[in-house]
Length: 627
Image (cartoon, rainbow, N blue to C red; front, side):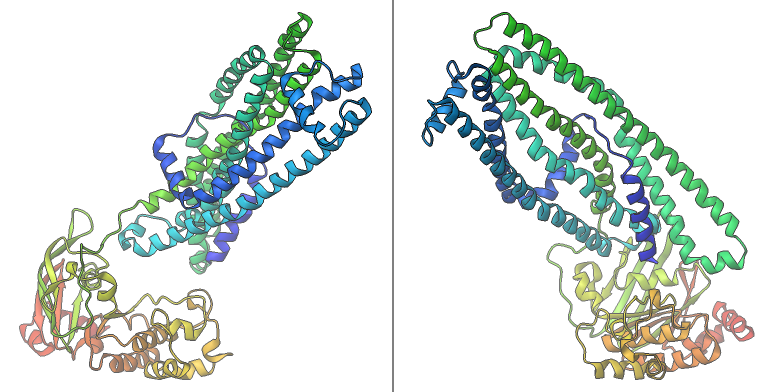
């Protein structure tokens, strides 16, 4: 399923990205966004410094080539190189170290050879710049995706109750790719284009200060008019990303619920919902493209206008007999200025891409900056064993303002089986989730062998638990890898032992490749009972002292329940077990039964003790026996 969603993302983006090529100038990024960007490229600062040096050499060689236009024009139109500018004179002196430049024919040949050699070296350094930048770009994206995935593993479960899966997939896959296409491409352009502009402008100042100052006045004016078009680009792009996330969430939900959609003949409804999401996304995308498409011809028109004005002003200086600006030197000046046009346009494109990509980076940092709860305290205690008991001491818990658990006081002694029963919404699963610190209590304390769980190292605490739940989580991998998931390296024989203990060996042997059979996305090639037995085999192999069973036999046929219950009976031996179940067969032999009602402990005791009370548990048993 994830592959289908990711493929959908790539296909849609590939079709649309070729249509949108913003080429305009935006305002500079604010410090916060600049800090986010710098944080992801800081590890590569020395490589980037090397890239700047190589790029600088390429630019200097390019400028030198352009400066050779002046002596070339002198030779062609006047037959000699007398009266060159200071720069032209110095270049010919350098050339004179290799050839005799006193002869026009020799000078002409030398200039042509120098131009060819300089262009070759310039392009060689340009290629080297790209070659050095490519691994930096790809590694930045790799690290960013790794950080996103690592963050997913640290974020609280409650974070994902408010996030749609499709939107998160869009952030992890599509937005990171957007950063490479826009932000990193912009950075790559700025590394080359800005340096090119600065050095070329410096060269223009050496030729004519008056003409260069006049030229520089025109550029900010053009940039201002272009920026008027693009101020809302980033806001619109972020809106587009959010709409895309909603659309992809619907795709993900459709793939997950395809059986229900077909069963209820709701294809038209699902298609209508998708069409509305797709239309909102398309309308926003269209608005974005129109703004981008408007900027490119305007920037070209303003650029050509600026060049024409410069030609008029520069031409008047030459015709007016300006001693510092001869006709050959003016041609050189125009050639150098023309070399700035593309870098200047690229800077505008880069800044536009940067702001467009920053919308994606903002969405990624909404995840990366999310608070990680629960988290370790300072100097947490690493726990290696469970020796005595777990005590709930006046424990209360709330997801929001409404308390889910209230004043819970129970004890789970080592080696005992404690069952928790109650109506749906009573807080049973929440109580179990507090033990491995999926959440932290909001009042009171839970103590393991006398130590508050909040003082314990989370990883070491969770290493004491195995969890078998109603919602079995299997992965698109082999049977063996699913059983050994999270348990380290195990031999095939150890995996078979766990499979036999979980009543899973028989059906595994019948699979095409046995333990090496791939069970598909979420293990859907297996039945519900088979999936549950694999999750029990995983718990057996993990071999932890504490076991949590959350509705482990719910919604199964009689034969599957029998096999699963036999496996559970084996795995519970010599382990401390917390059981959440609706079925009486699972809990009647528990050492202690906790009856939860609206988040409070209503009753607790053994099966016989609670039956004698003739209270809530007795009613639960009566309903259970009738079902």
